[in-house]
Amino acid sequence: MTITDTIEHIAAERDLLRLLCSILVKPVTRVELCRLIDPEKFIDNTQRIVFEEIRALGAIDSKRLLEVLPTRVTNRGFPDFELDELLTPKLVSEADIEKLFQSALRLIDVDESGDGDTPDTIH
Image (cartoon, rainbow, N blue to C red; front, side):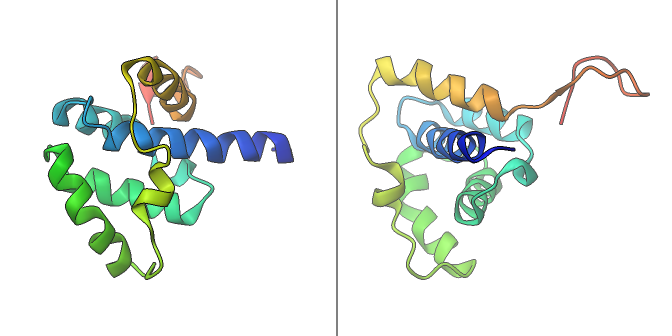
């Protein structure tokens, strides 16, 4: 992976987290997206921990998610974690949602190699 690819991948991770924390995303949609993405695909450790905590919280209301997430990430060993800094710009418009979904799709790995798994197995 080139430096440019790495930078773009980390930006896609951040966009995914912004999407998952958006009040415009229903809890069930958040759960489904989290199910489709392997945390091991994250390059940035802090963003991976945030993703794992979002996934572990399940179908929680986004307002509650934003309340409990900082404490959960801090408890995982990131005492200086600032959710507002990660989510800046915090307000996600409906127009932004499409861009954020595109970032999420980049992180979803579809295995079409046919090596024993069914086609289109999502890892």
